[in-house]
Length: 356
Image (tube, rainbow, N blue to C red):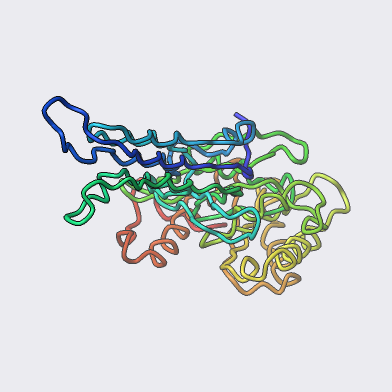
């Protein structure tokens, strides 16, 4: 299925049905009185967050949604039937904004959450609505009210606890496949990942978190170079960023420190809030560095980056250090979500393997 994270749609709720002006015409009912019913309400349009969806592709080709109008009122005290509602299923994390003003109207953040994106018009009043002790034979009736019509912009920002960022071929897809249930495409050429991938990491029964892998960034991404700039917004809702650095790049002459600094600069250009998120340094592909050279190489990279935060040394391919990284991530997420997540306990099945 093609990944689509932006769409523009036109929605039109149903108009209300017109009221009816009518009088009873029955044998032996000389003064039957008014019996014109009210019109029916027009159909609403709802948006519902569906956890089984992860793309807005359904709205890329079908762009107009129009609810049914209400039925007109009739004689014999008959009210019009309301128009059928329309329910649009959208991925969790969808932002619904007014396309003309840019105002954010709704955010679907919980599975099953439902919002009204266009309200149907109320039905008009029939003449029986105006009957009173002083107005025995009213002839007034009103037309139905028009339903709301809007042009909406849909934008999907995936919901994940942890986001992976780094240059192409830094090993992000390999890591997410090693620690979660995600199975992204992995190959030995740049830009293998073309759209965000989500994976659920199980630390222990009833203890898990969601990690997001986005396409690799390159210098100039904030100005449109490469693919990653299109998907940086998917990291805006994460609570922790893992900056993955390839310590043994395939191309000779490539400096991992220069690449890492370029990524940090792109984050700052894109959004200050994203730049200020907690960011951990993950040095990957240690299996390609001789054992006797690892310590010196790691110290050199950290020193030149002037990095003061947590540093993790892993090999996503061999899974060395991955279990320890997962445990520390969960501890961080659990601390952030004190009210929703249970205190972390080290699962004996994983052990506490410290990085080399």
